[in-house]
Length: 278
Ligand SMILES: O=C(O)CCC(=O)C(=O)O
Image (cartoon, rainbow, N blue to C red; front, side, top):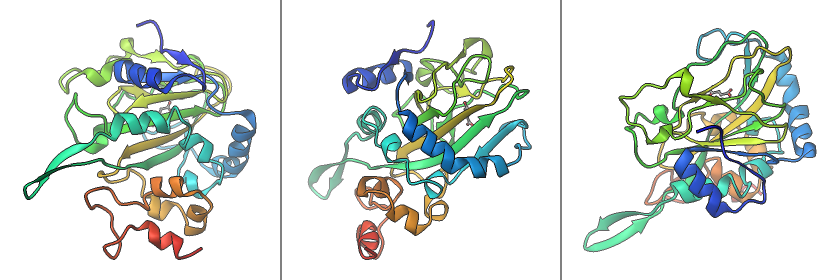
């Protein structure tokens, strides 16, 4: 494959879903506008500037990372509810599962939830990150149903030179025996405001930065609601910040119950806990 399919924000969801199922990844060129991108950068910049480089081969020794993103800004609604991101994630992951309840055959549809969030700023001199699958966190076998749909929003331009995310298209179809090779990976190139959406089973990694400016990306992962969140959102996002978001986002942050009965509080929908405080 020569490159990732590139679409615009108004593209048909049917088509984006089909491309993601086939290639495992897609670029949306105009995912977010400059106003949102600049507001996000303004909210994140103090934390990013105060953050030192990582100190291991995986996170990068010339890379700055900041997490707890929903606790640091109130501007993430248009990103996480974007119809092509949330829409594709819902279609790909929220598949009904048949179960027996006594003699009744019923179908339960899982929720999805915000799992990990990170700003990743790759500085000049950073080498390639090892290619990996993010759904390895779920200790699962491949190929199989998708348990994660992730996004990387370009807060600065992404190029082949500055560390644009390396992706192996189609690798979510591979089994667990086939190793990823650097020669199979292609760099994600996109303008500021563009986004890469990819499935958890796709091999990818941060690229090498041989440019003279940093590459700044913001990643959010949506996972199936019956899995543990990668980043503990109950600890990462203070209550007042959860309350600053609309119901759909609060539920995505984990204040929701995944059928048939995961995550309840006092045997009720945990969302009630937020309603009571308004
Ligand atoms: O920064 C990137 O482009 C990808 C980072 C990544 O895949 C990771 O840190 O797990």
